[in-house]
Length: 288
Image 1 (tube, rainbow, N blue to C red):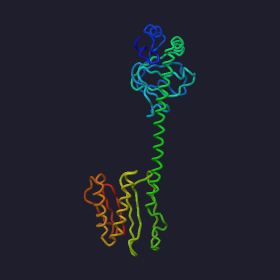
Image 2: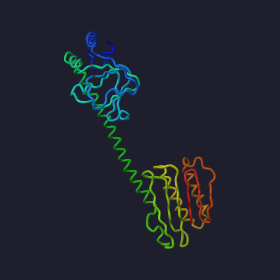
Image 3: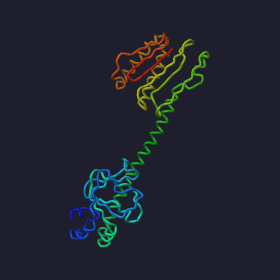
Image 4: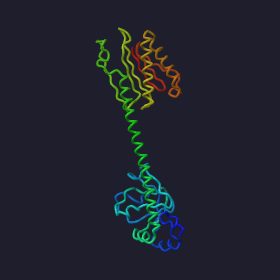
């Protein structure tokens, strides 16, 4: 009766006592992913794991928020104690073997052997501690996600604030009617644009798209947009392709990961004042 003696709830029983009770226990084989207990269903057995692995999931059988059942541990006690339906999923992780102990046999053994009642209290206490720890981790993750969402919202506001939103975009040039807007695929992203006057006769229109999405693309977008604006204003009379080549060289030198595969700068001339430049990480159109 070694399989019964190994079960934690029956520790303290002699071999003879275990042998007398064993005839009332049923062995059950479980296949991989088989659900032993389902929330909301009635249960009248205590199941003790004697081979393989089980895990308990509170809300969904596929939930990553679960905890294992070790060899010798049991499940189903709460339904037997209070008569309520099952409150959690119990799923086999690979082939497993359990002993199904009828509730009448369980209560008879509890009444006859006080050690079984003490074991039951110890097991339930340990399980409550584990569930508390699991719930604490879930709460911590939720708080971290909430904080991250707040930080991303702040980042979105900051990024949006860097882009021109006034209407019209060039109030000093009444002959031009230009409007623009951007909506990131995520909270923040790598798309950007800029419109500003270089002098009384010329304006710069910049449209860019950093490859990728999310925070890395948005950070690169900020750097690219800032450098372009500074270079185009401070070097307004330098040929446009030379200005953008300089910006590209600076970005490539300080962002090796983003530009690890960059080759020659591709330049497509649309007119004397409009160029398209395609880098490894940025597609950029500049017009003056």
